[in-house]
Image (cartoon, rainbow, N blue to C red; front, top):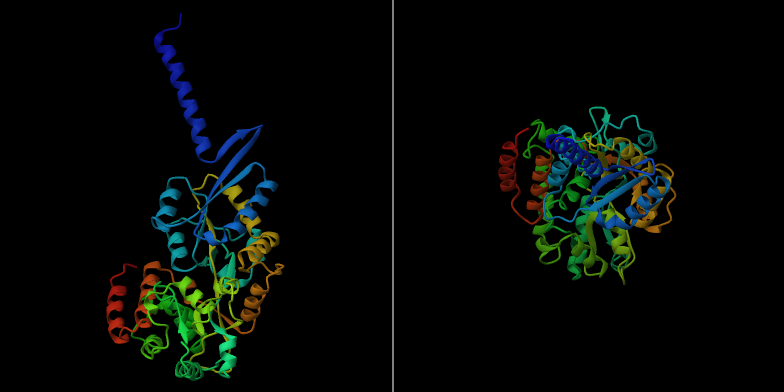
Amino acid sequence: MKSKGFIKSVLLVAVLAMAVLANVGATGQQEAGGEKQETLSFITWRGDDSAAYDLIIENFEAANPNIKVNVEYFKGGTTYDGIVTTRGMGGELDFYAAQPGGQLAAYVQSNFALDVTDQPFVDRVLPGAKAAATYDGVTYGVSQATSTMCVFYNKEIFAEYNLEIPTTWDEFIAICDTLQSNGVTPLVAGLSQHYIAQNFYKMMAAHWKPEESPDYWQNITLKKMTLADEPMPTIMRDIEFLYDQGYYVSGVEGVDKHGAAALFAQGKVAMNVEGAWRTNTIASTEGAPEFGLFALPYKGDADKTVRIVHPNQAHLIFPQSKNIEPSLKFYDHLMNKESQSIYANVANMVPTVKDTPVESPVIKMVMDFLASGEGVLGPNLANTNNEVQQTLYETFTKVAIGLDTDDVIAEMQTKIDGIER
């Protein structure tokens, strides 16, 4: 007869074995029919693009029946960075979206991003898409889509008052004055959201000093310059000027990006300063007027057309993931021409993989706009401190809603000086 101690030992071994199996399942690996089943955990804030993502994932799972992708569309309730950190360190995250610039740099510095420099999908994309997630010569991801900052203008209103696309800052101001004097509200922007006002700054800085503008934010991060150094004060004063002149729709401080797009689509304002990623939203609004795009002109060479190349979310693989190989396989699928075409045509985003077929006339309009001028990377792509970047967003917002530029510079530079870096 076996002893009670022996029986207890057998039971303990059985329990531990069951726990191990359960843990294997929890980390995304199971045995089924002799083939290892793997489950990837993927999170992105791009809920607006869920239809495209879902179709891409469906195609991937059909081609790779042993890999399942569980995607979650972040909806708030806590910080995105907090979720990435908590789940990643807890072994519950494999693949995730990151915003190029300070956020992505913070993930890289925290060892939350796998080196993918030598992966085949890196060579398929346009240079700006690779630059968006490359630091110190190491590529951690590529941008899935790209876009640009722009001014949407109502062609019908412009035609009524014989207005043409401006090529200088003075011409832009003259357009605002003409519209205002005829009872037409010139401008709207979603200024209740702190990152919208940066669109003004990026276009203005790039038009004035295209070769230098991509480095300004990083120079502030590295303490090589301050908000009091040019061209910061001049640009901020002119951003403040637009508010002081009353060019905006009344109550613009409380208008978000969706409200701004709606007001423009309804013909209540002549121009909306935003990103070209809002093109389809406006075009699909019932009764929307015929519209076009132009880059906000500023000081500098009036004959030089500059476009901000603004790669959107890149994707990163958590280095501590237990599913590195299937994650790389999924990344490769995400960045092939078929998937990029789906993303472009379903989500109405400009693709980054070369020679991707695009059907949407709206996306073609943005692609033509981007191709019509010199491309300059946005300063957020060079900046490596997310906290400094968020403070810069706040800085531009404060002057955009009419706060005194000198007061803002003093207040926000003090805040920047207090950021550890």
